[in-house]
Amino acid sequence: QVHLVESGGGFVQAGGSLRLSCAASGSIFSINSMGWYRQAPGKQRELVARITSGPSTNYADSVKGRFTISRDNAKNTVWLQMNSLKPEDTAVYYCNAAIATTRLRVDAYWGQGTQVTVSS
Image (cartoon, rainbow, N blue to C red; front, side, top):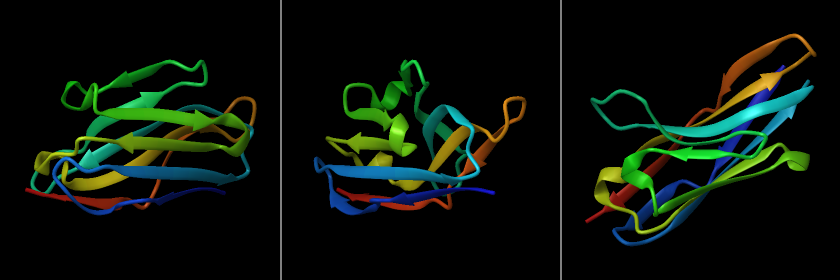
């Protein structure tokens, strides 16, 4: 059993900041990549940012220069620092991780989601 627990969502005015965190726990052999996705009402879930164990990072064009993803491998935790938030960043944000539970098995896991609301 593997669990991803997110925290840090909330309500903020445009231009403000929020920091999301996601901690993985359970029968973890290793964690490959970790990332954040978001889904706004009526829209498909989209990648926001991702970080590998390297670490290397990639970001959606819409958040480059405003969001920063980071991770602590020892704590199995990933963060998303969101600055200069815009109303269009409003969405449910989901943590995602590619986790190996054995040397040979890697599966994708999702958190429960955390709401981020940015008012204009």
